[in-house]
Image (cartoon, rainbow, N blue to C red; front, side):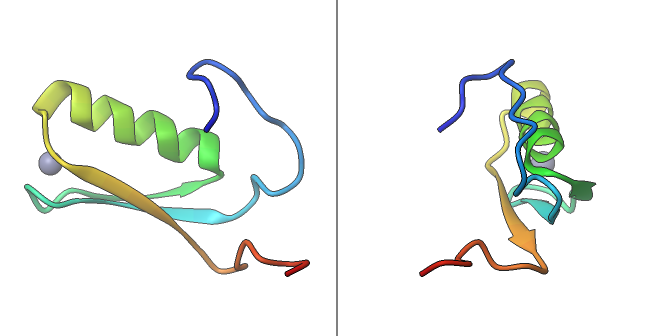
Length: 64
Ligand SMILES: [Zn+2]
């Protein structure tokens, strides 16, 4: 887990992320995990909803 406020600019942050809320119809698509985490925490903080995100496209298992 990354600390909030830490920007990890390494490779692997180029995927598209899909954020979905379980408590309302809110959905986002973002480029990169950092933005996904920001959107997620923003929505959760302002609504207290249960929000999750998942990466789309390139799977995070290149060397496994
Ligand atoms: Zn919501």
